[in-house]
Image 1 (spheres, rainbow, N blue to C red):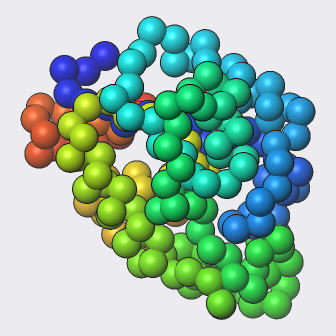
Image 2 (cartoon, rainbow, N blue to C red; image 1 turned 90 degrees about the horizontal axis):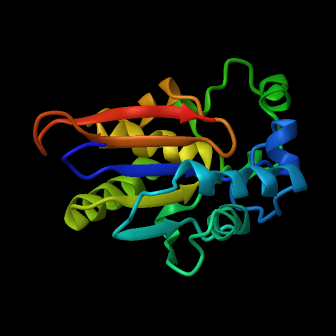
Length: 192
């Protein structure tokens, strides 16, 4: 436990599309039973912690994870926490996209009809500002690509550096500070 505020990031539980590698941005699909069970398991892993605020993406997969983890009554849906808008690539796997667009990389190239990394970064910057204003422990439920960009922006890295972080379903990561509030760090990452 740190003397400084910590931001707990929870990626939602598994869905049919996350299991198959399909890009799931704005399509609102439910958790699979295994994803529901994993979301319930988050409760034990956060036992004994208190949060000034609990925020969730408005997607049912994120908010249901919040509810199943025991934080639904405190959960506030925040549109800036929505997953990357994949536009024309919604529902496609990376392999399918690469067949049509060799060399494509999400964090570098973005999505036609959807968002670029800097668009997601602008949303992440608003969340970072709000987190720093709360200046207390906050619990956040969202999706992998958004949370990866959020981590990059927390550290002051460009949005495309979110590509450097991987996140499994129902994982917990913790952002915080080192010696003072001017030294943002990743305290723990992708814990299952």
